[in-house]
Amino acid sequence: MPDSLKIKGFEVYQGFLSPEEQELLVQEIREVARKAPFFSPVTPSGKPMSVRMTSAGRLGWVTDRRGYRYEDRHPDGMPWPSIPASVLKIWNAVAASERAPDCCLVNFYGETAKMGMHQDKDEIRFEWPVVSISLGDEALFRMGNPERGGKTESIWLKSGDVVVMGGDARLAHHGVDRIRFGSSRLLTHGGRINLTLRVVG
Ligand code: SIN
Ligand code: FE2
Image 1 (tube, helix red, strand yellow):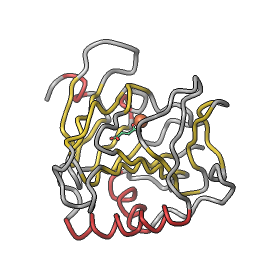
Image 2 (cartoon, protein in one colour):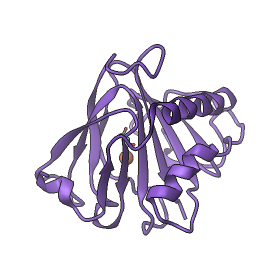
Image 3 (tube, helix red, strand yellow):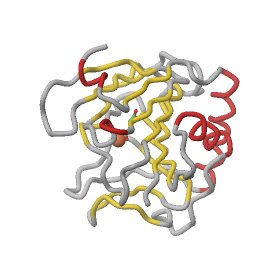
């Protein structure tokens, strides 16, 4: 494996979810989005993000002119739905944690969506891993280093893959360069869903 993919605590479980498990997850996420609709966030500088997002759990991750943060309500005022059971099952299987995640961020990537390099660092505690679940179209995931810059390495994440970023990889920079639109038939209209599970603390 190339270097940044070898950071201790970075794990890729390829094909972790069966097609049936992926279908069930999509149904559960549809239900989450029915209760807490996807919205189009802007960064604190006012730049629209290309992904649409919502959350499940005690806390949801949001961004707007007021900054990146966790909130206990959707921007429209409703509480976030609970994290679906099948999502928690994945956390229990790969995160080996007594602690349940506080947040399941749901990102939807349409044909041209991407996610710039960033660290997941809006949490209070960092001793639990970030678990990321890929559904639908393939995504070119770029992995960097805990410090800014340096060499990066990319891998294509496919539907059903699960990524764990714990240990030395917990605060590594990462992003999504692009998706391969139409590469999966899981979502009727194409695109990609990424679920990110985090303990906020
Ligand atoms: C993220 O880092 O928030 C998303 C990662 C992904 O979409 O795979
Ligand atoms: Fe992230």
